[in-house]
Amino acid sequence: MEIINPATEEVIARIDTDSPMDVQQKIEKLRKGQKEWAKQAIADRLEIIQRFGQRVQDQIDDLAGILTSETGKPLQQAYNEIKGANNRIVHLMAHAEKALAPEYLVTAGATLEHIVYEPLGLIANISAWNYPYNVGYNVFLYALVAGNAVCYKPSEYASLTGLKFRDLLYESGLPENVFECFTGGPATGEELLKAPLNGYFFTGSYATGKYIAERVAEKLVPVQLELGGKDPLYVANDVANVQQAAINAAEGAFYNTGQSCCAVERIYVHGDIFDEFLKAFVTEVKGYKTGSPLENDTFIGPLTRRQQRDVILEQVQDALNKGAILETGGKALEGKGYFMEPTVLTRVDHSMRIMREESFGPVIGIQKVKDDEEALRLMQDTEYGLTAAIYSSSYERAELLMKEIDAGTVYWNCCDRVSPEVPWSGRKHSGLGSTLSTVGIRAFTQPKAYHKRQN
Image 1 (tube, rainbow, N blue to C red):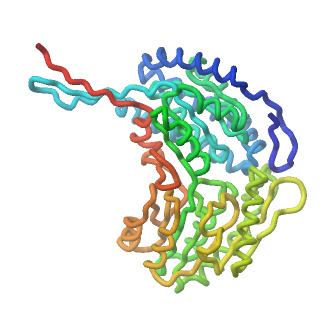
Image 2 (cartoon, rainbow, N blue to C red; image 1 turned 135 degrees about the vertical axis):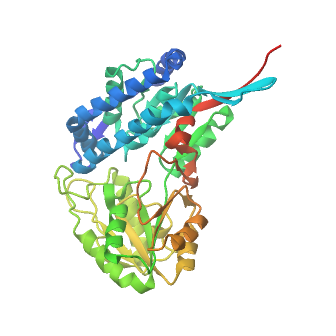
Image 3 (tube, rainbow, N blue to C red; image 1 turned 30 degrees about the vertical axis):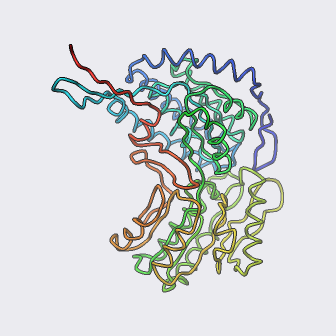
């Protein structure tokens, strides 16, 4: 399999992909190893994960370079991701032992009762390329701490990073029969779907997530899906600082070249402040440097996949054909690499693909609304339910909207952020289940109830 640098279109590596026989042999090895791993004390597992985290930080220069070379992520943002992902390890160190400990619920009387949280067993983590550290850690580190063995399949667009995960885990003392990296494209993933595994955890598109859920349904094993979104942001007319709200919204839309599951994908602005907001927003976006991801001041790098750039260009043209106004951008850049100008559209509505379909790139539509009721109706007009943001000086006003929004995460005066302290979950086409928080630790376990009566 060829690994292509999306900034230069050069082949930077060639790696072997796993054959069906390779997949089967790795799975057999992992299933045997999991039983011994589950017997280890949680504190011992955590010690290995902590060493892994330290090795990652010690080698951050090399790892950030690899991440940028295969995904096109601007180098500074690669550093940010690798540093920031360590908060998952901090969270596990603080909460895993308590979350996984037995719960003694009835401790007096004729029959005593308690719960034990046992590992699922051998799970598949079919991961994503846009934030391989963040979304990978959310699954494989939490699964390992809970006593599972992991079939980790990185995206074919982040395979070099996935192989580094394997090597660094082994160097940190993780038994080699507890974690394996499965390389390849859809064919490798299909082999994992066929295998007799005990759970499937996928991060990616709705279409692929739906396929996975249908494909493994007959096994009746846990399936968690972290899928996409069409995440809305509303700016009310009482916002304390219109310019700052515009700056925040622009970063939420364009960070990581817009390739974030929780990126702002559509914006609604109260008519009273629309012109002021738009001027500040466009000024901010025009100031973003687009270019080589190796340069420290680059904010917009190439899209990781050429195909996605084509999808976005089609969305832009659809909007223009239906009456949208192009405020800035709108074109692919000439030359090597999958670059596109950061693009802002106004006079948009929900007849346009740009306001309904996931874009996953450096483009945003901004729509004027007359009041909170119209904003809420439009924010709810979606098949997705990942995140939604409200900017207002009044929490009471924002809360009325946040309570009504059918999404797994809501934000007040912030956007596009994830914390390990609270669950990360989607609704509707944005997915099933939760990672992170104590909910995400227990997601990799199955409870067993004990009823104990002495004769």
